[in-house]
Amino acid sequence: MDDTTADAGIATPTPEWAAAIRQARDETGYRGPDVPPTVGGIRARLRGERHDEFDAELADVPDGALFEAFLYHWWTQALADNADGEEARQAAIVFADLATALHAEATQGARLNQPC
Image (cartoon, rainbow, N blue to C red; front, side):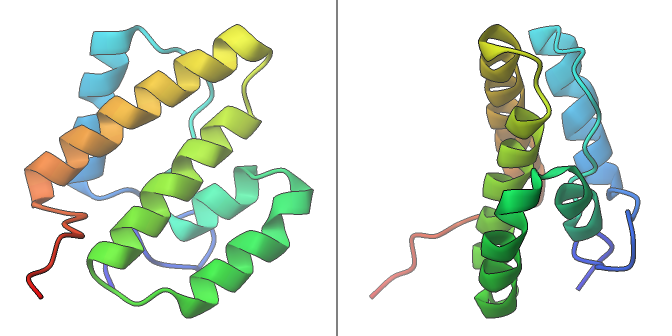
């Protein structure tokens, strides 16, 4: 696993993540709190009642595209959890959607459609 999957504290995002976050912030104007798109960064910013669900999913998720999808989902949730009010929550979700799309495009990530 690379540093986006490290569970040792709050790891630094990969260069691809950093670029996607920068571009999404520029394009959306999002100025909400930073949540590193890493296992440690996400877990640290989730509301406490979500930790058990996060940990259970993390324990079962394999590497690869499914891990990326897991990371995208929970990163968005952590951003939403830290928003101050409904308008800020919606802005966080729009920002996260764009950032994850940019990251997936840059890394060819989260390709869940596998041939049968």
